[in-house]
Image 1 (cartoon, rainbow, N blue to C red):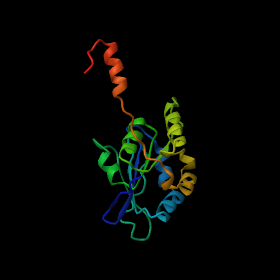
Image 2: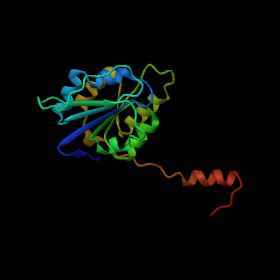
Image 3: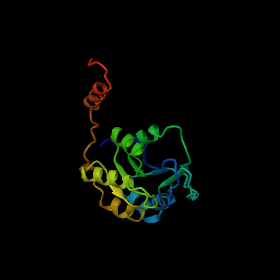
Length: 177
């Protein structure tokens, strides 16, 4: 998996998507999670917090040996943030998961147990079983970080949709190329 470092910064990017997931935001700014991230060499924590109402305290430069913390609500694209990150911690939305995996970034997916539908949980657990990412809940994020071995992750290789597209084209009556 690729590791992104920028100007001596080792960034952890956190995304909750377009919804509210205050439990994830609170988990990543908890002292034990910040200490574990710092112990692992991360210097900056940037949180995309969506519609959440909890605003974590900002830490400007981390000069006192702590993690620098900043946040924002929304961005038209999070791809640049993911590219600049050394680690991504994300909600379990399929778009965020696959965008991160396609960019080759280490990923911890945190499942929002307050959502009604568990298809996100199933996706995250299946991808964890295949060793493409780590899966956690807000209350297990620290434990996941302490056991995390990034070198054990297997790079995700997107499948080729061409055969499926050909079958659909034939079904719809389009000629083969």
